[in-house]
Image (cartoon, rainbow, N blue to C red; front, side, top):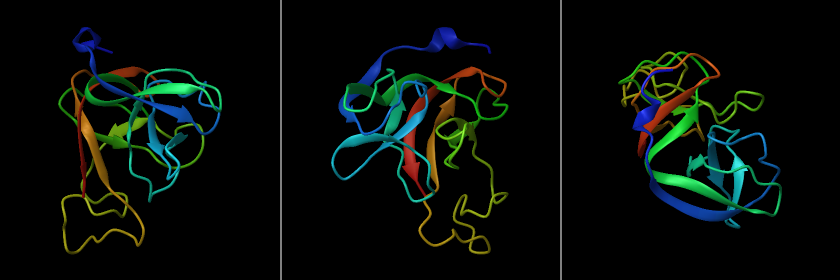
Length: 147
């Protein structure tokens, strides 16, 4: 875990937690149609940003949507990697992982031979400003882009 000194402030928006998020600080979250923050655990959910607090259901929470933030790494990340949210439900949901071309069946970079599955989003979350092993914190410059 190198370079976390790069972490600085950014733009945080406040939402109500739609479920218990006490174990999800620095993980990617989504916001539902009612404006409530939820774990990102499905391929069709757009990442709103990164949770900065540890709210219980119904409590207000801060979500970093722009700037630099800490994120929990789902896999080894190297400084300079483009990262995306891991959305499979379970212990790793909302952690970040390297964005790779074509290895998981999604449309990375728009290759015609590798179309996304119906109902899936492939979203770049940002660029790693530090390196980290799985489970460690990594510093990420948020620059979200849906593909």
